[in-house]
Each structure stands twice: as structure tokens, then as C-alpha cells.
Amino acid sequence: DTEIGFTNQPGYATTTPVVAFLGPLPTNHTPPTATGGYSGSTGGGGGGTPSETNYALSLNGSNQYMMVPFSSDLYPTGDFTIEVWVNTLQNNWAEPALIDTTGGGGAQGYTITLDHRCGSGWTACSYVKTDEGLFSVSGSASINDGSWHHVALVRNGSSLIQYIDGTNVGSTPISGTFSSPSYNIIAGTYNDGSGEGGTNSEWPLNGSIDEMRISNTARDITSECSSGCPRSLGSDGSTVAYWKFNEGSGDTTADRSGHSHTGALRNSPTWIMP
Image (cartoon, rainbow, N blue to C red; front, side, top):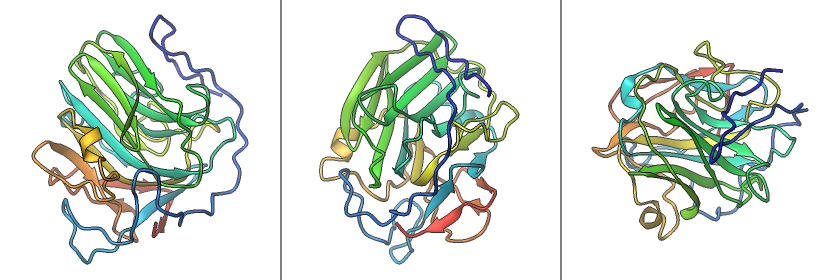
């Protein structure tokens, strides 16, 4: 196994590899309305159309993921917001990445993982590496219950904040910037350092992702989710990249922000209707 090199110092996190035996793909991909307000089967907004069928990507927990080539605008130099909807039952001692640009902590960027060691259950645990160090934040709300959950990581000035279903579940001070980012974006596992997704047994996500958005501003997630987190996040002037995963077929997914950050889908993830 390959060790994920998160720095062990005060306020930061250490991640130790574990041996994971990946179970079957979760079958509960049509849950009741999620805590965060995910419901319905059609999605417009932000580059979609009112009649557009809403799809999501189901990943097998082995070798399926999305890869987006490196671009400097995917690493905002100031405030930012990273959002994604996730549905999983994974609880097999793995530490799957929902989105990763750090290569397991080795490069500047951001990572949102699903980890049982960050709180009292399987919750979102996030890391940001800047030119001044590695910073981590997490909550304690479990999200591996087979329902859809909205996860957001926000940098607002000197604060790094984790949200789950619109609730602020943790924050920590942060400093520095992305002065020399270098990695592609990988969604569904870690970047293995070569520009593709790692298939080390504890890294891949066994579950589904939908509606992933990167913004170069600190979004007000509490207000955004005041009536339930929107199932169609939408695109505006602060949106750097936005993947709706609504194609329903094929091996690429469009960036609905208009910035042409097309995602390449590796090893044929399954298109599902959430």
C-alpha cells in the first residue's frame, strides 16, 4: 500500500493507510429525500434545461473516477468553495476521496474525503495544502447512510469551513495560497501523482456523486441551503467549473460553467437516475 503523506503537526492531520476490502456497489441509489433537500429527477439551472433528465455517476469502489486536466483557475488564489452531492453506504475502513488535487497531500490543492477517523462516524473530512502548510477540517455527522448529502468546503479569508447539508460542522484557521499547484482534478479517488486516479484499495469511492461545483468565492452555504440544499447548484460569475453529470451516456461529462473543463470518465462509471 502507498502511504498518504499528510503532514503530522499541530492543527494538521495524519492519515495512515488501512487495508480495505471493498464490498458490493450500494444498491440504494434511489433514496427518499435527503437531509439536505435532494429530491426530484429533472434538473435545469446552470447550463441545463428545464426538461433535462437528471443523472448521476455511480462508482464501483475499485477503478472508476473522473479526471479533469490541470488548469490554474481550478485553484482559486483567494476564497473558494468546493461542493458535491454524494450517496454512499461505504463503511469498510477505506478513506475514499470525493475530490482530490493534492496527490494524497503531496502537492498544493484540496481534498474532500469520506473518513471514519475524523469524527464520530463516516463523515466528510477535508484537507487544503497551501504554500504555508496543510490544514484540515471535518465534522461528526455520518453521511454513509444511502441518502444523498450535500458536502461543501469553503475558504472564507482566514477560515476553512466544512458544511454538510447546509450545516457548519467544523472550521479551522488557514493561511497561505496555492502558489504552485500542479495536479489534475480527480473525483472518486485520490490523484496518484501521475495525473490519474489511484486504485490503492482504500482510495476509490463505492457510491455515487452528482452536481460538483468549484467557485472562486466563499459562498454562503447556510443561506444557499436554507430551504434544503439545491439539487441543481447552478453556474454564475463566480463559478470556475460545474459538472452536472447529466449526459446519461458516454465517457465524458461537460463543464457547465462555460470554461471547458471537460471531465474524462475512467473505466465506464454507471449512469444512474437519482
